[in-house]
Length: 112
Length: 112
DNA sequence: GACATCCGCAACCTCCTAGTTGCGGATTGT
DNA sequence: ACAATCCGCAACTAGGAGGTTGCGGATGTC
Image (cartoon, each protein chain N blue to C red):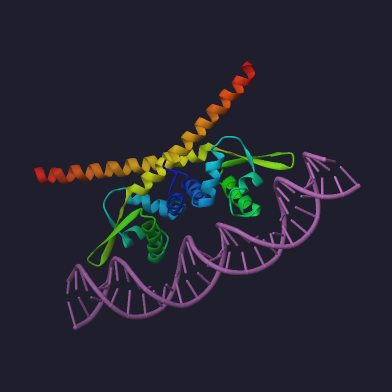
């Protein structure tokens, strides 16, 4: 079905709906967990702002943090991303199917 | 590269980050253009609220409206959806690649 | 011990979002 | 002509998002 849990999907999409967070996710795609200060470097924002963005991503289940010494390193958590990716794929599929049915219907009318 | 235009992607994601708009999109996937009142029926919201949501979707380029008589019918516009779908697919791919590299590196260390 | 880093908490501000209500114009139906 | 329907515009409210600053605690470095 994959159309359940739209609240969860909306949450993930909302977390993706910000340029800064997209940039953070892109950097986290490199693999190794990165600290907040390291993620802040390269941005024009404050550390606190990045911290809040990471909080949003964490609440959406898209990142996971672990404390190592004095720094907390964030790592990507791919499952929510894969979920919404599949969700969008199914929406596209449904739309294509609907278009196909409509087209077939119109052609059927023309043929009669 | 597909990693340009992150602003546009963020806009589409933000438009997807709301349960009501996800429901509207799901109904628009059925194919035929639907009027605002028809989309409002089935929701607990006001027509104006739905109008605003449609405005957000339209600004993101995800729907297209055409006026027919006294009603304006909205239709899905699949290209932005397909764009962000591919964007998410590439993020997943990059993450998998990074994990593969890290795993290979660790195994290389163990083997030496 | 002294100092620099890294971080979390809290307060504050500004702006946008989601939603409502009221009103008036345009279109359709009888 | 009249009523009902569909819509757009404008004003208003409550609350959340994004961002900054200041402070203090914990950790690492010399």
